[in-house]
Length: 108
Image 1 (spheres, rainbow, N blue to C red):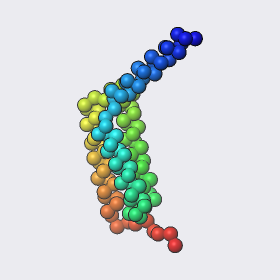
Image 2 (tube, rainbow, N blue to C red):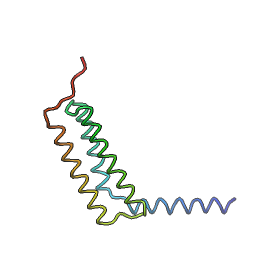
Image 3 (tube, one colour):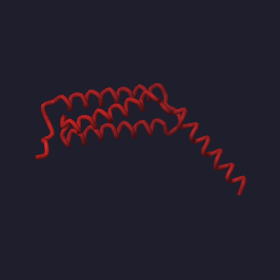
């Protein structure tokens, strides 16, 4: 029993080390910032329901891509560049949707 508990701790430590090595604070920061921009657009009425759905779907796709890249325990330079390219496009999409003439109708 004691030996199996030690083995579980070693496995947990190894798994957390791998995910820490794959972490990219810049990517994570940008994702959180973009989520806040979308939420602000919802609160202000700048984003319609459909625009919000589309932007959230785009963000979800980037997170899935990031998880796939990190699944081997490392994030290569090429993978990081691809994530930043996708985040750049998502940022442009957020800006474009927030600044178009479509507004969410206010509740009466």
